[in-house]
Length: 360
Image: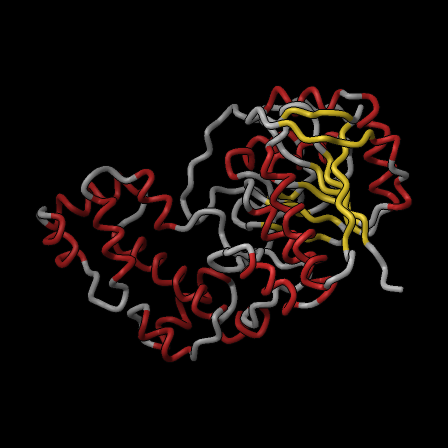
């Protein structure tokens, strides 16, 4: 008889709803697609009963004591805003049960800021992890023994699986299904859930395009969108300045102030980000270079400079649309201990949102 894997999703008052329901939908879809109970999803909370999310929607949960840790295959802890996280970390039942469960399960981890629960309980010391982009700086500062990857959508480090903000829990759950049953099932689930694309763990939380559209002052948001759609065209300063209606000198100064990058560096980042996506789609490298407006030699050199390896090797490692176990954004080796640095995507960290105390 085929084995049923129990997935425990840990909620608590004030949890982020999608951190639980997103992965739950993926695992339920896997069972439907296989026409058998491949996964049993159990939503848990410290005391059980109706547990309210931060959106006001409550879920029916089972008490931690009602599910023996030895029956669980995978444990995932939902994230929340700071007050709810503080209460969860201080809960005696949670503090006793989670470490015990983590020692017995095949996989454990978190979605979004749930990483703080794992860190506070000493369960990810020395591990490489992901968390919500707004929380990266706080997590790195509070727990210097943890290597925080501020770019990856999700990271696997041994039996520890951690994802970034909210919807990335879906991406990580799909990767778990892929590990258990192969890429065909994971891709079928993604199609059934009408996901635009399966996102590999090494993909950045924020692309240069999205970040700049959020942060750039008018009229650069529209200009950047046009740049993204015309990567194979000349995107030099004279062309961009003319389109923005500015002199070249004024355009360069204002663009740098608005985006934090010179026009040339920003264009290169857009082109390399798109090249990385196309590599994952298995297009020929020569065709990819043409699509992003670079010669094959320039693509190879720029790609290796940014990602630490040439495109062909990157394709061999990541380009089959199957996310390898342990996948994370390939970049320069981390420094000892905490390796947090400002993302090359340039996203900003709003300080103070997750300044949790160490309560290990």
